[in-house]
Length: 364
Image 1 (cartoon, helix red, strand yellow):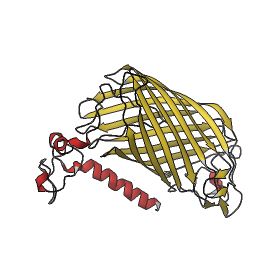
Image 2: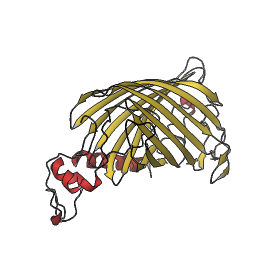
Image 3: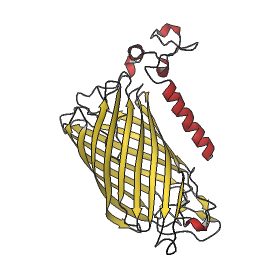
Image 4: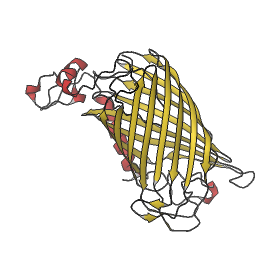
């Protein structure tokens, strides 16, 4: 898929979601019954004129109700095992400012998550990036900056179990599998030497991943865990291309690059101080390790690396109603350990604009 194709796809998904969101007073086309009478034909959740009619026809897909599920924004790097209920969706812009000596990369993915029912959720991420490079990475007295679109990310999440009891620590947690796919829509070829790498917005590879996610409520605490393996397909890159470790770069005109497998690991502890406002704090650990071997493509010729960060974060929800909630989060990721990877400090911020369907939780 080209960059234009990725943009068109995400725009179509956004327009489809916004137009057909639950609660929009629209008539159903022929073959669909928006009044809740299934005798008229096949029912489709986004064509309902009100939540009560939708709840009637889709009651069989209603998720288990959690007696305690606060309006929290959750961690930045660790995913959550619960999927959004059918008819619920949200938009969540993030901002990560990766600060290293001589460089800054403001990474701003726009996340759209839609509950599909049948314990499934679709997530898409369209990232915007603003890169800046200055001394010592560029000649003294000069600097360069570049803005554009990074790699597009899609995820299908499948929830296997729900939280069995939100008060007992040994009760069954929520467990999910996530299947991820990245498209190299960010610029990585034909780099301008005068930009000193600022115009590189992606790593040039199609990536596939399988992730395990776990989440456990133990009021007033929530625990998160994520572990995944990312396979990066080979790619041909040019001179000036920066490898994933952010230190080494390629000097050849046409280099057939093979990245090693990337292990992704993250966990978080969340303390909800005020349930109504989703106010609290989080402590999160996040890391990656790229090996010298690719699962499907043999030995890697790109450098391996690893790092571990810890991130204190705060959160609050405002405003919130039964239908809409906005959750806000901020924090900073600090280096604990790095091998062949630069020391990186990362201020972070996010806001989630959440639209509740008939089975939603936030703001209820």
